[in-house]
Each structure stands twice: as structure tokens, then as C-alpha cells.
Image (cartoon, rainbow, N blue to C red; front, side):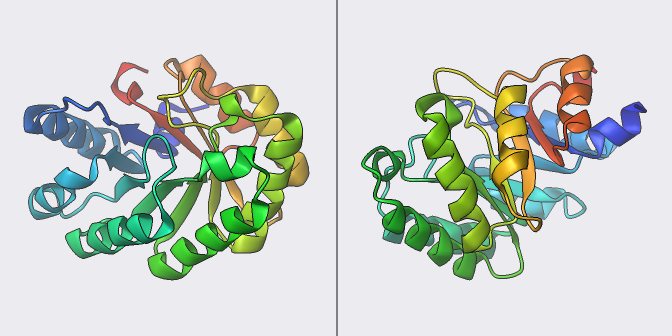
Length: 211
């Protein structure tokens, strides 16, 4: 697989709590040079990036990384992110609702954020490291019904990141309109190629410049 093709699927990511503007500017300069799909950044940097890098697609996170913010708070985050210039939203599901098997609440929340994002891209992070296979399957079905654009494996802040096994499970249970994003621990060209070969459309990684 050509390097340019790999990079066109990468959300070039910097989500560390201590990321400075210099870190973010470096990320954005790399994204421009490498033609990555987007930069994935903390919400507080969206407006500054939009003002300085109008050509970039900006992805940001909502309810990150734990997911247990109330829906109203997540909606407020989405609204502000879009006002500041975000193009894509990566939301974390309420994992406590998942573990309580309150799947109606999970679906209601994703639907609310789907409506709020409108024509912008919505990705749903389900944090696979905390879930059983049954819970992962139920979330594939919920993400499909709610009309999200992507199901995403991980925040990168959990106890483990993406696995090829989870991507294969997703493929069996998501609807035809849902794409897949793998994130968490994907640091080499070989790993990126493997996830793309399994059908991922996006890869979240901070290592795009290293491949």
C-alpha cells in the first residue's frame, strides 16, 4: 500500500492533557505536509487551528475520554465545537449505561448527537477494552440504527486499544452505512496497513509522521 494512501485515512492525533500550542502547531504542519484525513485535537484548540489552518479538516472529541458526561453536556460540547469550526466529532458513549445494559439510553444519546452534528461527521467511540463481545455487538447495532457515520474502537486512554479481532467483529454486525475507525496503540506502517486491509476507513494515530 502506498504511503500517501495510508496517510489519507489517518486522523493525525494529539490529545494529551498537556499538549501545548507548539505541539498542536507541529501536528497541523505535519498534517498539511502529509495530507492526512484530519487532525484530531482537544476542543480548546479548534478555533485557533481553524484561524491558522483553514485548509485542514478538524476532528475533535466529546465526552472524552470516560464517556459518562450527561447528554446535555455532550450536546453543549458539540455545539461549541461546531461553532469553533470542527468538521468531525468523535463522541464517547456512556460506558456506564452500556455496562448497566441500558441500551435505550445509549441509543437516545447517540441519536441526539447525530441530530446536533447535522451534516458533519459523527464517530462513536465504544471503548472496546471494557466491553464483552455481546456488548460490542449490541453497540454495533445501536450505532447503525442511530445513523452515526463511524464506529470507533477506543479512546487511546483505556486499558487497551484497537485489535484486529474487534474490527472483524464490527464488520459482521454493523450496517452498510457505518464505517470503522481503529485507534489506540497503532504506531507502525505495518499496523496501519493491517487495519486498512481489514476494512477500516480511518485510523487514529499520533504516529503518522513516523511511517
